[in-house]
Amino acid sequence: MDFLYSKTRYSSISRGDWEEQVRTATALDENITRRGSAALLKEIGHGVDRAIKAKIKRQLTSAPTLAVCYHGGFSVPRRKLFARMFPEGVVIGASGKHAAHDGAFALFAAREAVLGCRPALMSPDGRFGREAGTINVLGAQLPVTEGAPFLAHTTNAAVVWFALLRKENGFTLEVSPGPQPDKGERFSAFRDRFYRFYVDRLEEAFTGDPSNLPLSVNWKLTFGAMLAGKVYRQRRPTRSRDETQHSDSD
Image 1 (cartoon, rainbow, N blue to C red):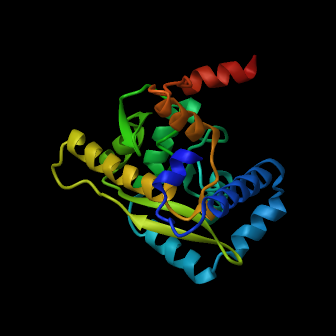
Image 2 (cartoon, rainbow, N blue to C red):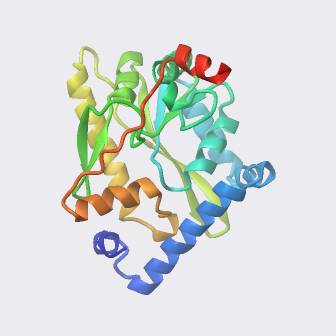
């Protein structure tokens, strides 16, 4: 809490008020995630202005698009709302039809969807897959893979940041445009641009409105490790589709 408050752009809010808003957001997020019924999640979706949803649907289906987000900021209702809005799209998460532990299968399904102008949603700060490098977020080193930038590069997809935000009377959606591969651009160059954009969005979220800052376990561990002079490097292994099906049949 001390570290994030020292970075906030909402310096006009007292430390006590800021912390109360973060704790309220975290409790709300946990309640929605753990106890949120289908009816509640549907109600959250219905609360988002129809015009905003219609505009985002047009934007994300008019061309190949990869939407990115993070493990924070009401991540579970955000993923489920995305799935409701784009039933033919692909959501790569910790579980579900396109679970991140399925590795290559999930990326292949996302590639096919994106090429068909059916958007995919990914969280590049996840813990699945082989570490390919780190990015610096407010001084903390976050290990990342190449899955998301590779998907965008191979499909020439437009990248957008997809956010679910609290407002006074409910929730709203916000989409921020990101990089798109230039013709002939090398993957390494695009990957660097992709992660510069992603870091910018993450730091905007962590230093912004505390009412939209529910803290996830992964990020608590990431910042905690940084303050201890370490890097939180725990990874979760991915499996091929054949391995997953064999395991499920045992």
